[in-house]
Amino acid sequence: MNAKVVTNTANSKVGISIAVLAVMIAAALPYWGNPYWMYEFVNIACFFIFAMMWNLLAGYGGMVSVGQQAFFGIGGYTMLALGNLAGVNPFIAIPLAAILAAILAYPLSKLAFRLQGGYFAIGTWVISEVVRLTVANIEMVGGGAGTSLTAFRGVSRTFRQYTTYWIALGCVVATIALIYIFLRSKQGLALQAIRDSEVAAESQGVDVQKMKLAVYIVAAFGCGLAGALYFVSNLRISPDAAFSVNWTAFGIFIVMIGGIGRIEGPIIGTILFWAINHYFSDFGTWYLIGLGVLAILMTLFAKEGIAGLLHKHFGWDVLTTKRIFKAS
Amino acid sequence: MIETITQGILLGGLYCIFALGLSLMFGVMRLTNIALGDQIIISGFIAIGIASVLQLNIVLIGLALLPCAYVSGYLFQRAVLNPTLSRDPVPSLVVTFGLSIVIQNVLQELFSANPRSLDSGGLNTQSIDLGGGFVIGVLPLIIFATAIACTFGLQMLFSKTSTGRSFRAVSDDREIAELMGLSAKKVYATATGIAFCLIAIAGLFQSMRTTISPADGPSLLLFAFEAVIIGGMGSFWGTFAGALILGITQQIGFMFDPAWGIWFGHLVFIIILFIKPNGLFPKTKG
Image (cartoon, rainbow over all chains, first blue to last red; front, side, top):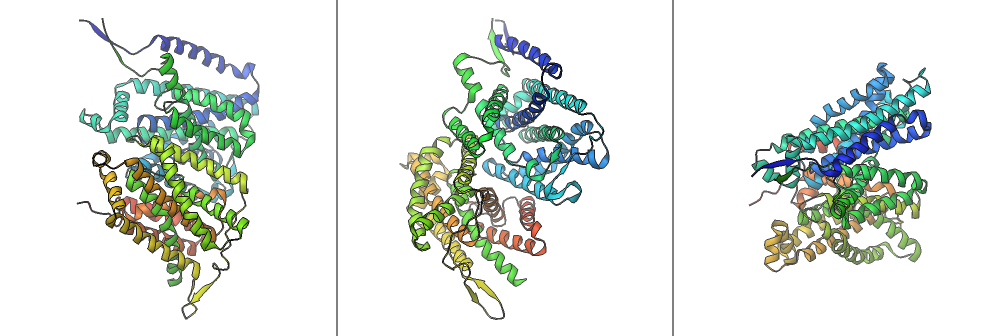
């Protein structure tokens, strides 16, 4: 009997072709769209990258963090400090800031990993609060009131907007592509095994602790990247904005609505979040109440999210991480 | 210094009541109630609301609040939380986190962001002079006594009553407990009912002792959590001790610099988590 392992589905090939085309059109946006769209795209891109990281942590690594805003803020503030105080070009400071967030994640993991489940969630929140209070007391970066990114003085506005937009687009594509490639690799398979059962994965020779640490560090990198990018685009930072738990709240909303534990989940969730945010964010408290209620209802009645429902009812599986065994 | 420590111990009493509600639910069903702080705040606002409409004595308000809290906790567990319980921690965390956001914004909509407090009929200004200029507030003393009573009560409930036995049974092994004829869902609901009573007491005291505003919840949750972890999971007296340690540390921090008080409390929590991951007074199994 001949058999082979198939890692593509029919609609995954179509889906990826459409995606490549969409990216090419998006890359040309500065030449056909208006500047406000670029600004909005950059903001939504930051939410998206953050949500992808939360999905990686909770949906694949089994780690529910309510403290990822720690790394988002660290990313933003590192970029700002490098730009304003050390004279580094902010665009170059973006990856440096993400790297610092990843480095800091290692010692912080030593603390957070002492807690499990729900207590891990609150523990990460405490850590993020400690970082926020610490930064709020550093006068060099504006203290509690925050400060502005002044490193762009003398840079033309068009150049700044175009470059920020392209970096954001690049980060979005890279995030999707890297997570997709990772989850299809041997390590990715190990991570999904951990999600399904830690004990079983360990008995098959997967080093669970090492894998979780790796995921935590990668997620810190991604959130730091999102934070640096967000404040390059917004130019004004404060501890309350950078370390706000709302980042995690929106991240959770995006992942739960879109579909946890699927790469398509945060993509669908972000598009929906963008639409809701675009049309309803003026409603302030009612908007947030609506998001909260929607996330609760989704969790109670459709835990698999929209991507999961599409898969269940229509068999859609665009960015598949499955290995399908076919006998021929 | 002695005065600061006394203040810290009394503050710790309040934190203890916060922490017991968290500890109880986690102990019985491994559920972390992220909305705990917001539930405390909403209880405070309900008490303020009742007081302003009915002009009742605060003791009566408290007594009226408790059965309501129990029933709402029981129903909340049965209708919302029970379906989220599984080996996967994601659903229950997302639901309670979502609830936290909803409560904060509903309160914001109804009461605006202005801080309010419950009129305790002058109780919060009364004090006892212990001689030598050493003065203790009556309200903090009442809160502290209540904290001891709640801790003692829970410990007794767990070790001496059949309800407590069912709590321990479903906590140890839900399936075996169900084979023995217990309904885990009902046991969980009872536990949450009791936890909501503690939350109501906490809300009443918090709104009398100081002002409350809609966004205060998360920091109360963090204090409760820190007290539980410092004390060590699985023992109510441990939680009590953890809360006192947290209260004292924060007061000492406030004494040095008001901007660093909370930070100092967090720092001590982190140090203890680092050197004694199981807390200072872990309950040894066996």
